[in-house]
Image (cartoon, rainbow, N blue to C red):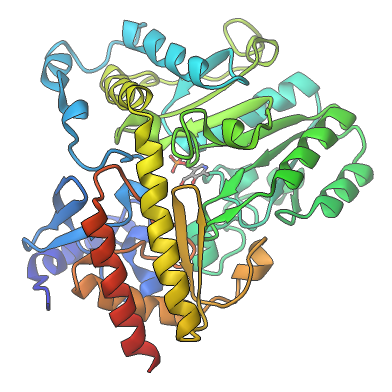
Length: 432
Ligand code: PLP
C-alpha cells in the first residue's frame, strides 16, 4: 500500500508558515522519524483518517486520553445537550463536583482534587503544594521521566526532548532548575544518597510509577516502596505523576496496582476523555493549603470546564461500570508481547518488546531496561525506518522511539493480529 499525502503535505506547508515547525507540540512534526506529519480529519474506534482519505490503525490514541478509542458512543452521549447549555461560566458547575467525587472514589491517596487544564499544570501545581506544605525548595525527579514542560521540570527530561537530544531547554533560567535534583530511575541507592546529601531540604519526589516517556519502563515495587520510605523518613512528599497511568493501568491507577500510596497524585489525559484537562489531588492535610482554603495560590479561567468535565465523567463512569476494559487491554498487550518477543528471539533481532499491564513498547535495542541509561542508545534511525514503512502500511505508531504504543478498548484482536503480522513482515524486510 502506498498512501497519497498531497493534502497533508499542503497543510504542512501552510502550517510551517504560521506555527513553529508547523505543529503545536514538537513530537507531532515527525522529525525524529524522518518524514512529514499526516494531518488528521477524523477518528472512529481504533482507526484515524487523514486529509487524503487514508486510514490508519492508531497506536497513539492522542498519547493516552482515548482509552475507549475515537468517538466512543459513551463519550458522545448528551454532548450536544451539554454544549447547547453553554461552554464556560467561570463559576462552579455540578460536573466539577461529580468529576472530583469520581477521582476521590478511585484513589485512596486522594481526599480532595483540583482540576486544571493540562498535565503540565497538574505537576507544576502539585510541586507548589509540596513546597508550600514543607516550606522547602528542592525537588527530586528521575532522568527519562517527563512531567510536562514547566521550567523546574524541564531538566534532562524525556519524551520529545529526549528524542531530539536536547537535555535542557534554552529559556529555562539556571536559577529555576537549581533546586531540581535528578536521580536514576529504579536506582534505590542513588535516591537514598541524594536524600542523605540534601537532608531536610527536599520538598518532594515526583515520579512516573511506570515511566511512559522513555519507552515503557515500569518502576519496580521495591523502588516505589523505597521512595515512600525515604519521603517518610525525611519529611518529604511523594508525588505520583499518573498523567499516563491514571485510570489506564487500573481504575485505581498505579497506586492500586503497586499498593504504594503517594501524598499527591497528578492526572491528565484519560480524565478529560480527549478534551484539555489535568488535575492534582491528595489527602486533605495537603490539599487544604490550596487557595482559597489556604495560602498556596493556583487558579484557572477554564479549569473544570463543563465540556471537558462531561467527557471525563463519561469516560470514568464507563471504566467504572466496565472493569473488563482493563482485562481486555492487558490480554491484547500480552498477545502482542508473546508474539513479538518470540519473533524477536527466534530471529535473533536486536530488539526488545516491553509490556506492563496494558502499556507496551518496542525498543530498538536488545537487553533489559530499568532506567534512561538503558534506552538512550536505542537505534532511533532504525526506528524511524520502521515507523515510515509501518505508516505506509496503514499503521500509525508513535513518531518517536521513546514513547509507548497506546492501546484502547476499541482495538480488536484482529487489529492486534494485523499489527503483529505487519510488524513481523516489516522487521524481516529491514533485518534480512
Ligand atoms: N506527565 C506525564 C507522565 C506525561 O506523559 C505528560 C505528557 O505527556 C505530562 C505530564 C504533561 O501533560 P500535558 O501534555 O497535558 O501538559
